[in-house]
Length: 210
Image (cartoon, rainbow, N blue to C red):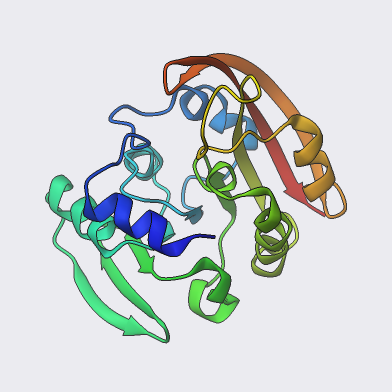
């Protein structure tokens, strides 16, 4: 993962990937997971996603990880949530209002730092990673996730050579290859979308760790 690329995006406010509205696939499909409303949800590469507010409004404590201190700061400031910051190993940890956001490298994250969680919401993490990093990312999720952990994963596909990534295209077959060795996978649906002005398609998956 190109750390400097993403940090520079936030520093220069080039965050076209940030969505002001709740993601419709989250709103439509989250209940299919059947996750208890008091259960913690892990949001990898969370940015300042408003989707975390949608999940929190349903009762879920949120733990996220993000590279950019700007994104973490903006998340709490824009929501008007008082927060406290401390150091947790190699991560800066900011907490408040039922949210815990860790600032640092997801590939250095351990179960001791992250703690237990019941579900994962990945709208912008897998598609932000180039193909040569995907297997490492899936492996890290496997290390962090206990048996029974469920995920809502949203990916995107678009015509070849029409878009300069990120986001990276993640065909459905790639999801199967990455996660089927240790997860049960259900494809919940597809929906049309637009990426950088180009017609594209999103897939939404439910994963469950065996």
